[in-house]
Length: 420
Image (cartoon, rainbow, N blue to C red; front, side):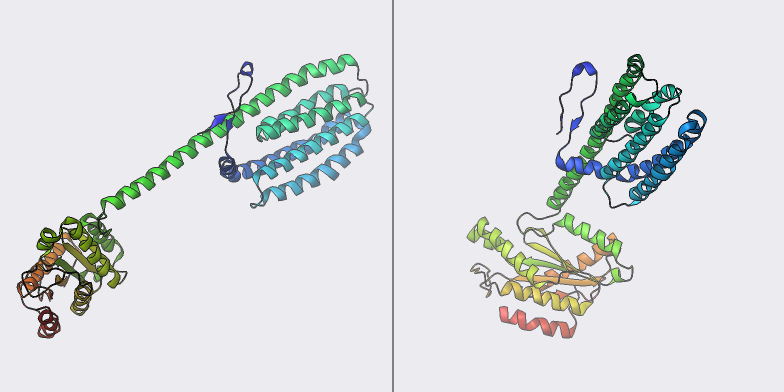
């Protein structure tokens, strides 16, 4: 939230927003590129007009022509060129460039006053009313921040009225007439500068707050998405998280790589009996330990998720049957090594184990993914039917219940027999 500075209500001005330090810094950064272009363009324009007025000096003030040309072209023109070079450097802060620009304008005002004060031509009295131009330049034309516009206005006024007493033919009445023109211009241009600054800052704050709100909403959406796709107990992805991962793989992988994916369905053996015997608290702890053990053993590119209850799913991209065999045995062994006591298995296994069904095939489309999952699920039931604490790999998606290849079955048998 922002607060506004108190100002006199009779001025009828909108309050300037009070920016925090970070907001003020962001505000200056946001206007840097546009202000750099604006200042460079104004420098060229103002320098051209200032030098063009040398012709007016020649026509009106013939007695100070050399002084005019010397100050305008010998002093102010080099300063304008240096200023243009200074403004072009992107690393310099925009406020420093605004101060430098105002300084050159003030130097031009000072040189102009010196030229007019040196002339003995009475026409200088009418010419001196042009002092208000410098007031308009430092407020409206350059459009600096209000604080800089106010300070520059005071300096310009001090220069103009410091030199007015040296003007040929000046009288108290002339000074009064001059003030009658200059003071309203002074006040009105500062009001305009204030309004411009107020509108710029409010527009920035509105944009800044909108961007902040969008970032916050984005963070909340990301958090909600993570929550909606994460199993709160095991902190593994859930079904929605798996769907998102499959969609990601389809986006980033080559079509032919999607055709060779290993999918493993993992089920904790006799988990209902474990829950009934030891309670749901122990069941939850068992699920967490099993999930952590499997996650530790898996390579980083393998997606492991909890489908629900005691069932898990692993997806290994760009894998063949041999990879699925190694992965299945790795997971079975990791869970068995936990040695979580389970005296209610109804068989010779006296600790928590898992059975795994695996299949290799395509995840390129939803129908092919469904066939792959059905094959892995059927292989899982085959592993359970043959004694649990085992894995099976489907030979063909068309016939997922077919036995594993001889070499794979031989690799699996020792684990199954050991559990028996």
